Length: 236
Image (cartoon, rainbow, N blue to C red; front, side, top):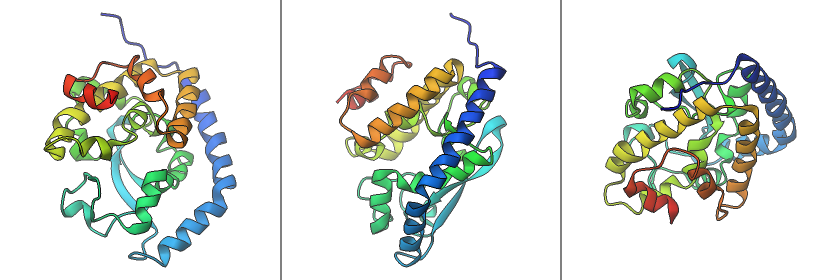
């Protein structure tokens, strides 16, 4: 088996610098949009603007991930709990648009600035989902900052759609999708580099702007192979 080596200290320093430059620039450019979304949320739905959820970050430490509110209050305690299903009744009308366009993730630019996140990294999980990762995957994932986007985010850009095609979405997500996410995030942590960081930023923009593009398939050829039941869904 090929030895696994993570990124060098210099690589991590360069990536942190790029995180700050890109996220600060994005906050400045997108500030009018952020204000408009905040106003719209304040005067629609339940009046909540930001949603804070505890996620697991670098070194296994908890932090509060920021998102624009897209769901009803206390939604993690009702229905399918932390899993959002297709046509989930807990999602607010404006929330559907924000989730589809990923605009609900923009407040995480602040998480990047304060050091909770990187632009690219393993997607931070709640304690429930993190428990489905293999121990050998968690060791590597905890070495680096989680990301606003990353390999897992790109591969599962339309996760809700994937779950609509299986008989038991919660069970499939727990036993198939989530453990596989741990494997691909492990792959990223081992192969992290400045060039891969830039590539995944570009790929993130493309899969959001052009969902039908073949970028996901090109990435699938490089990461660990998914289980057969999941491979059929990802390739379709």
